[in-house]
Length: 389
Image (cartoon, rainbow, N blue to C red):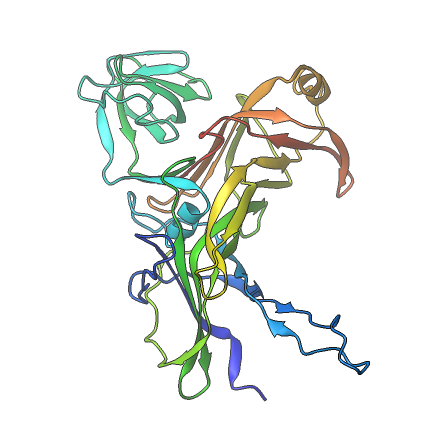
């Protein structure tokens, strides 16, 4: 019997100040719940079986260099407090997403409204796109009770374009709230690396610690209806020789519980849409350059390319409602917004400002006709906005 249990381990992830320099994550601030953690890769042996030695036996392999990989999933959920990062925030940042924390609600009385816009109060931000990707609610006056996504914001005019369009446009009597939130958006500069610690605890005595430094990741999101929404992170970074260490104290983890994919609002180009499965992949290509000065001959990881793709499978409908094939042929782009959760700090919004269909697939779901719609999200540094509010 092994003295190690596969479920008895602690995972820590922390953003590095200097890529490849150990950020020394701590159990009190950097712990992350994870599902099915798995190591792969690591230094590879160099075969040495082609030397003529006077015998038929192959020579001894030589230890070579290389990086390492680590894969795990986490449940998609907020931290429980609006404006704070979720505990897997560092992993989202390692996946090429820039983080913006809006610590407090932004409130005010609108100056005006129209079918798809609201003019915020004079004191609102003067910075373009300051609120893009965030969730706005009309809290009083005309249009009260409506919740929308800010799809665009012009700082000079204070005009926020919302998606989908208002049912009842707000006016100068309407009060609003842009919820405190943590927002993650793809970026191409100032990208982050992380230090990852994986403690595997012995039934008695010390723990085994494996580290990954200078790591970047790809992220794949899966939202099954009535199930647990997850994001799978696939990290790649510099290999560190494992070590035996004193068992750390119990980690500090968020007390919130994920909300299943139910009571969700899903709008595809302004039309309420159902689905059976939804997923998307950031499509990060992670690479590591050679570094002869490194112990294992490899440099920190970096994201060198990104292609966001996804798939949704709504029930088949009339072409007048959704004509996937014609949209595909014409390269027509559509907006897509999903949000769920009913508790402040544990609500999730995912917005694609422009998706382009890349095919159309017939699908049977429990005897009902659905159509699988693969898509890409090609907007530079803005293909998807993931918001916890």
